[in-house]
Image (tube, rainbow over all chains, first blue to last red; front, side, top):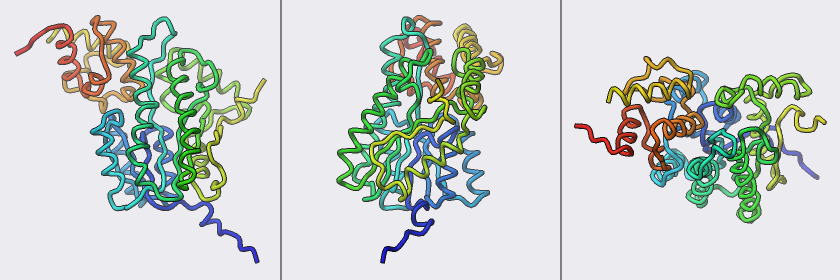
Length: 258
Length: 82
């Protein structure tokens, strides 16, 4: 007789999950949601201690197991620190969600090779280095999730560096998904569409572009960080065991509008 | 230092639309919400333009507060402070 998995088994998260860039925006939503779904979360951040403290206060108030880890993942010391902190209270990692990202938003003639280095250092190189450093610490059914961007495939204004770095991140993730699958480690990619976060303020013409994004979305609103977290939860759950090397887009349908 | 600080304050205003007078040598990303990972690169890029310097990845790592920014700017422009 065939048994059915319980919903808890299929969709509950377990073990220790590392969320890089886990204290603001999408990363914060993922940290909170994953902790509420059963995982113990280590939320990494670098610059904004206030945002990190706010996340910790929320998690303490709600009784969610979230610990903070301040580290610069673009440095070897930072990676070493994360590798050590990620395994506090645990012997293995059941997952890693890579949300950290940066970039210089300029037209191509204004970009320099240093801008390239800065952007790729966090968006691609650090993901590579961190995954490598933690490889022996992932459990057999661990899930690695790279948060990408529509800019990996679409030529968005001022986005050539970030977009190309996300393209590299996606390609690397796909290659890793094949190499790590025999170890039982799944790697997938999540592409949020336009999300209502403060990131718009950093873009040239941010307000106007946000309005355009809303107008393009069939639902008439931007996707929320929580909706991205739900999709991330699914990809990291047992219910997604058969999903390897895939890209899930969470954009409210904007990408398919003609 | 005062001249450099004033110029750095102007860069902060241009990057983050923040009142320059609120930026002191003690200012960290905690005091400037837009000074996140993306904001950091925008800030670095504008500092390069404002001071005519080149910042590498290691410099970005060390720019944890305005005091460090001024130190790095000085090192790049050949200024020694006591």
